[in-house]
Length: 459
Image 1 (tube, rainbow, N blue to C red):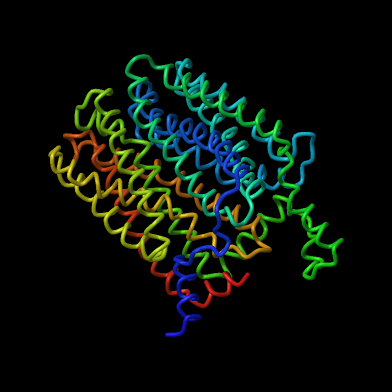
Image 2 (cartoon, one colour; image 1 turned 135 degrees about the horizontal axis):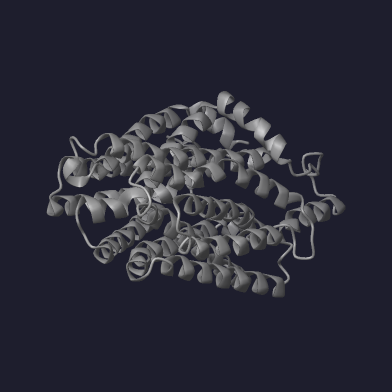
């Protein structure tokens, strides 16, 4: 096999290393540290809500379908708000750039809504305030995420993704460990603490970014293109001067991308299923442990926090394994462990046996969560970044909506039989396992679409 063929295969499998890898400059290290602040705070906030909302709403209703629908409203917001906010932030111009106004406009009202979740005392108000929080969360998140390519040069993109994944993992782990513990002390406490952290992190981020003079970072590419054109460098055509697309233009492209490209179609459904498994788990895991298995809330939080540490280990191992053996190949193996781990609690309530299955769930889940976006990145043609960002958000949104609702339905249908002993919450694992194993079919389809993947990777 020729070296060229090996390189092409490595690129298709996601195992090729970036040719731009180089030591980070001092300024880039500072930028990465600053960008980690919102990642940590946003991950902590969304995880606090998605994991404790079931326990809060349980005070007002025992209908798991209703609980799942309320938690699934996160996905409804993810279906359309990121598309609008991300595209709008591309074209907005202000004294602090185009991204930061959205970060502030989303994070501050979102923190207020987050704090109010602990104080409202009716199911309708809880649902309303939670939905408001989800909406503002996505107003802030998509423009903030776009600041990574704005501020980081291409040679540091890999490290930027790794740093973001680490910060997200730490925020998620802190929420999983501390959310239930704080909730066991006082209902408003986890939401107040998360709101304070969110405001503090965003405020510090905005102030420091403005002081560094990088608030308008999204104009770097535009300035670079103009400078290249002025210098007479080749490759400066009409594509270089193309204006960012509007949300409507991006939305119109999505169906065509899915229909035209088998690889993108397979990825869309695979990623939606991965999100469904995770969302269904987060929505009902605390209720499963407290009501289904009878653990105290504080003990349940410690168990979940321990699992979060294993997930971080899985995420770290997955990144290195994906670089060496290919992201798609590693995800296929991880999904088998992930789905098998979910199968065990369906058939038993034995705590030692369930405990033995947890590492498979945590390590497999950590790998899938880490590599999901890495698999998509090579499939993003240079002239379709806007559409593919909307594509990714839409795929996630479908899964985030479906997971909690399907889990709630299955729990409701099995609450008397066959899972009466756990009040039906044992059935949650059916949805998670089915989503993980079903996604393997689409991963195989993605691998099989070799010609289409090569076409997409060439741009």
